[in-house]
Amino acid sequence: MTFTKTVVLPVGLDEAFALVTQPERLRRWQTVSARVDLRVGGAYHWTVTPGHRASGTFKEIEPGKRVVFGWGWEGDELAPDMSTVTITLEPVGESTRITLVHEGLTAAQAASHAEGWNHYFDRLQRYVATGDAGTDEWAWAPDPIDPLIAAEASLAALQPILRGLRDEDRTRPTPCDDYDCHALAEHLFGSLTTLGDMAGATVTRPDGGSLEACVSEMTGEVIKAWLAHRGDTIVGGDLPADTAKTILSLELLLHGWDFARASGKTMKVSDELVAYVSQRGLPTIDGSRERGVFRAAVDAPAEAGALDRLAAYSGRSLS
Image (cartoon, rainbow, N blue to C red; front, side, top):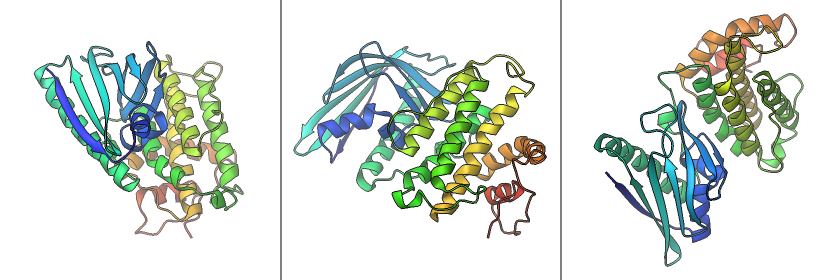
């Protein structure tokens, strides 16, 4: 069966093409992370929502006009490249008509994908109209959850905070030790590199790009490495693999909280996600406290939210 969806966006052809092909644009409305090799025969890998990863290869590419790619889900009955998505762009005055045709689906698959494409095209229209598609409720509190799904959900919560940082925020102090925002970003890059190395991958900061883009791409590479990792302990060490995966979520959530506090924002994250990461991560915080990584826990007021309580447990002041 085939599903077809058409929308008209008040943007030109080039911008419309970027919205459906470029990782930094895709993360604004459809994906948590995206790796895209935009050439015929090139592959893409999208984490659409935490734990749901689509991938395939590009079949046809006409910049500003048309893109055709195989579609499927990793670990699913509809495997990568088992169906085909064609996106066609046509000018309508100063706007662009986008038509998506998804072919090669069973009736059940067509119904579920219709729900998905409608959901994300609504978010695309909202993003183009307002500049912010808002929190994706489908990525809010993933169920089922595991350490890497939690890391993807933590990244989704962090991204809006990073996008909101301004140049003048670079020198603002954060609640994390003596780091300002710039130094904290460098620290986070280093942590992601180390966590990738633990899984046997070389993860480096991309050249250029925004802070949100660099953190998103590096986190995606770290998660990719851990998805491929086999074994209970890290090669060359005695740290359990699940502990390292949980550290990834702790880094994203706690440093997201730091950036948010430094820039006067509130990080939106579900209590369910924080509870999962806290349950797995508090022993790691306790152990690291002995090495001076975390300060002594501080008291959190009764009305504090779940993320604030986690931050307080890690030694961060809420005042």
